[in-house]
Image (cartoon, rainbow, N blue to C red; front, side, top):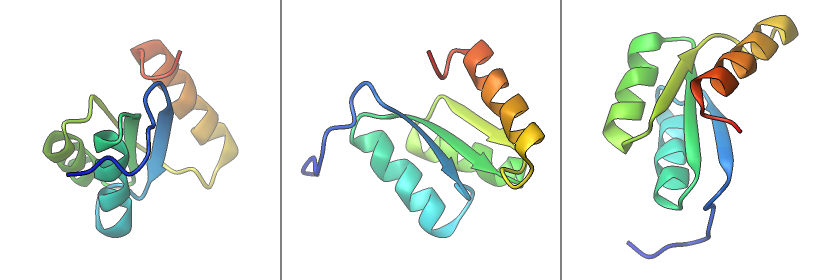
Length: 83
């Protein structure tokens, strides 16, 4: 597949990555070189997206609540997803 754009060295946190458009965007951004974190409320769906797209990281939780989202970002930094 042709590379549409270069996301090498970028980090993309894709919400709703467990299905539909979110899953497609997570896979596309991964193919374009981004370090993608698949975020979804459904842990199984997030893990399946990460596995299918060859992504290293997935997390569950909501981005609608600021404190929960900040904790999730901190967890990703500790896991090495974000430098």
